[in-house]
Image (cartoon, rainbow, N blue to C red):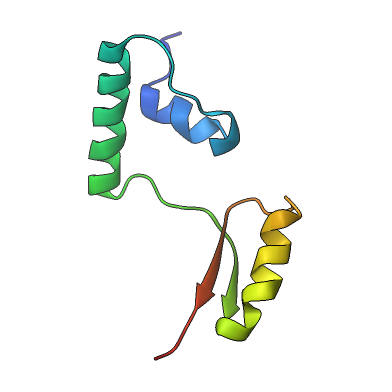
Length: 79
């Protein structure tokens, strides 16, 4: 069985455990891979919840501080 690709490995790891260690050359290769993936749209953020308006900022902060989120918390503001 072939080893999984770096992209598959990155997708399988939650961001909280992803840590770049090793040689400068290895970190450069990973950085290049991630940069290419971001530019191609292959990596997408996980959005836990979307809140509306600046008045929801305290709720957003409470949610983030609770560590109950499994992705990004987004606050949209109409202007």
